[in-house]
Amino acid sequence: MAAAQSKTALGRGTPRGPYRNGNETRAHIVEAAAKVFAERGYAGGSLRQIAAEVGVSAASLVQHFGSKEGLLGAVLRHWDAKAPHPSHADQVGIAFFEALPDLLRYHMEHRGLIELILTLRAEATSDTHPAHTYIRDWQRQAVDEYSAKLAEAVAHGDIPPMTAQQINSEVRALLAAMNGMESEWLIDPRLDLLGLFGAHLHVTLARWRDGRIMHG
Image 1 (cartoon, helix red, strand yellow):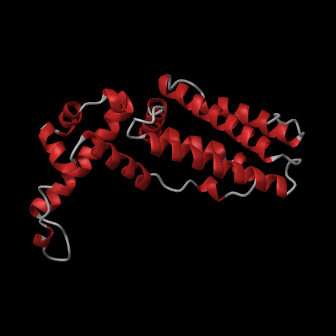
Image 2 (spheres, helix red, strand yellow; image 1 turned 30 degrees about the vertical axis):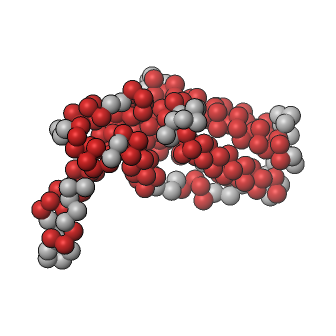
């Protein structure tokens, strides 16, 4: 990296000169790459397009990140660091699911983040895709988290008993509905995403409380 001169920092630890400028350039590149990958996917987004967004050369991108795959890794790390812990995740049992509209509202306010993850999710089905492992783990973590919350709802008596397979099936169906509706909203922002998902969630929660569970 051209800005590896950390010893030039002066004053109260404030980076100056090439070090500061190098860090700023890297940050701009990562943000531009996230935008391009979200709009065009990893395969469709080129280093030339990303470089044009920042106003640098494609060679500069390679100098900072080594390769297009290295840049994607930086984008995914940036995504993880930037996305705050949604408040709904602290809810217990059925309250977690009742608060899901808050998560969708957050996604709507941060369109770029969810656009990136959904674009990569659709593109990274092949195990040769550089984001395949990241997306696979992201999906597994979501299923595990939602399954644990649904199991809590059963344990607390919020809903009738479910088997582990039924919990898994219900959670996967709910996540698929969320992802699908968000994808539709990305295509057409006029869609009433909160209203559409809210209606689906209302039916789902009523079905759970009535014990009308999918057979797993």
